[in-house]
Length: 394
Ligand SMILES: [Fe+2]
Ligand SMILES: [Fe+2]
Image (cartoon, rainbow, N blue to C red; front, side, top):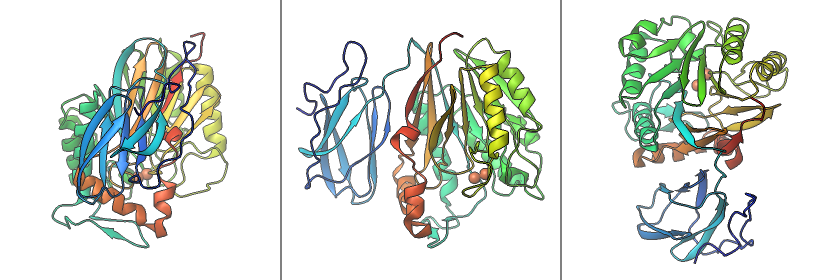
């Protein structure tokens, strides 16, 4: 049996982990990329050729390897429980499912960011990786399309796209992005990023509008869904890399203050904690993002702020506000984010795109920058998957 008797939640809700057992040295190397309250996403950098059996608690699932990367979602797991993953009968790894937020689940939405439609079939430097599809079949549309299919299957009822929709801001790139985002047939709201306001860019609103997608340019788009107000904001500065709340900040704060429910603010630029940029690319610098987060907590303490731009995964708290960064579907690790909205909180999950041809590409791209990218971009499991109960009193 893979779930020891002490690996379960107590009646008070606190987590009891299984007694620590070392993974077997002979087990196939298995990674836990995403956890929810009842699911786990496992990833193998190289799953040996043949059929394999994965056992977690009372779930037994078959997976077939071709020698390359593979991924699997196992559902139906007990919530808030420490569990062991047995692969072909050997202990491969352990993890814990998340506690669900308080109350009933009301709604699911998903985000994608940094599509960079119109960029080529390569990624990074030292080395520059080239996708096997070449120029005629670049990985970006494939990765975006697969992300859209997988987030829809996860149950998203609204999709938010968080900027860098295009690589150069060209009309044909906005048209490709709009077409892909509209494909799943669920409502979509989008905002722009620094790549969408490069020299020579066009205003994407008419193109997105024709596809039925509201695009935030120079302001915000607000959508109330069950249990949450979604505020999609444009914090770009034309022809510049960093972002700013100087123009859009007051509108976000007004929308948060007047909401009769918690808020999720989605924008392109990350909110840097420090006054100087410590890594590329620069987002909204420390003093300004600090002032904004303090004002947001004042306006509505039940708040999440999520961004892209860095193509990496991080989470931090600023007072009661959860602040997250989520990567791109197109480069390692190749992700989208889901948000389960409950009566008493919200849960974020970041999943890797699982389509085999995309997974092969996003595994390859971790080698860029001498392999540093593969260690920098994913962040920790706690950066990607977490439960936030809303603070009491609102
Ligand atoms: Fe980007
Ligand atoms: Fe960006």
